[in-house]
Length: 232
Image 1 (tube, rainbow, N blue to C red):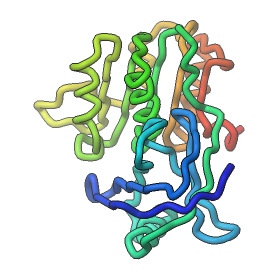
Image 2 (tube, helix red, strand yellow):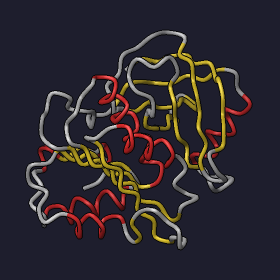
Image 3 (cartoon, rainbow, N blue to C red):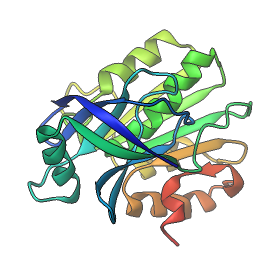
């Protein structure tokens, strides 16, 4: 990993709980779609966030979920709001896109885990890949699905990509699935054998997903998620 100075370009709230952060690195560096960086708050305080932009983008994009004023991520947002520059360490993570694989891809995001999936999908589009890809994004409600507009644009623009939004609390005019994200996947798939699966979200969700997927024939060598490095 490198330590890279970045200019804080812009901080924009998607909603009352998620912020889009744009950083401009002062030095170029290479990363793979699906990797993450760490914001350096102090020498022994480095906080990881998925890179939402694809490799080659001019700016680094982060999606920071910061609903509680004194929370771990909100402290980062407050620092970025008052700073002109910030140091990051990057790249990190082994759950990057295996772009040479021709197996169908299942992308699963819970909440701001969508940032991880966004980088991968934008890389696929930039490379002109047409591997069949299904994107499941689960949120508490429609308002929490802060970037569904771009996901629906992917769905409309690319015949190889299917976006399946899942919310627990849905309005009457909701265009998507309603219920628990993992339950929905269990209903939609008889078996997960043969898929490359990429997953990001809260550690408890990712851990529960791995357990559920084992009962659905998942090949764990093709189950990618950096959370697995931190959970048993």
